[in-house]
Image 1 (tube, rainbow, N blue to C red):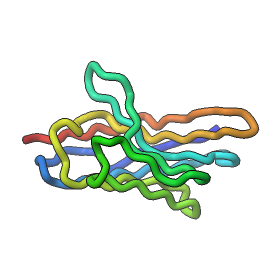
Image 2 (image 1 turned 45 degrees about the vertical axis):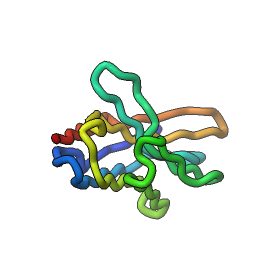
Image 3 (image 1 turned 90 degrees about the vertical axis):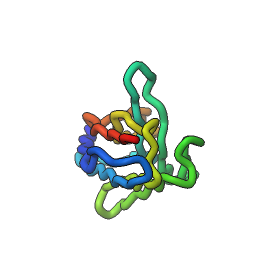
Image 4 (image 1 turned 120 degrees about the vertical axis):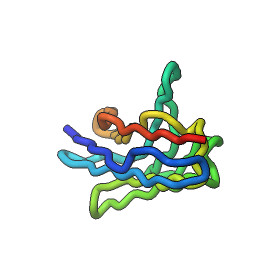
Length: 118
C-alpha cells in the first residue's frame, strides 16, 4: 500500500506562484509514475503533470511553460511549482502514484485546494 500526502495548497492572485509538495510512504516498490492531477467543480479529474521513470515528464497543454514537476526518489517526493497562475487553475489538486508491475495499481492523495483570484 502507498500513502500520499499533499501540502502547499492555498490562495494566490493571478500571476502569482504556489508550490505543491507530495510525500509518498509505504511500499513504493514498482511505482514508476508520480505526478499531479486536478479537478475543478463540475469537471472531470484531469492530468496536470507527471514524471515517469521511463519517459520523463508530461504536461497538460494548459500548464506548459508555467508549471514544473520534479520528483526526488531519495526523498520519495513529487513537487509541482506553479507560476503565472490563472483563475482557471483553480481546482483541487491530487497527488498520484502508479505502478505498472507486478500488478497495475493507482494511488491518490486526499487533495489540496488551489484558488486563484483575478
